[in-house]
Length: 82
Image (tube, rainbow, N blue to C red; front, side, top):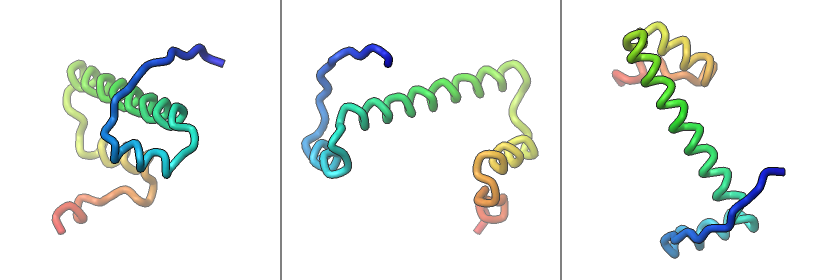
């Protein structure tokens, strides 16, 4: 089990009310949201670094990545034009 640190966070009252409707474990919910945001930020940093070293991703690379991430649900280029 990882160690924890107690902190105080201020949120808008309406967000707290909705949060309490969603979960009895507010700390766990917030911890998961923070972890997800950290992963998102780190991935973005890695992708920017990769592009700085190797150039922009090609359309083919982006299509392949979307396919791997979203499978058949990946939006096609034609869907963007609609």
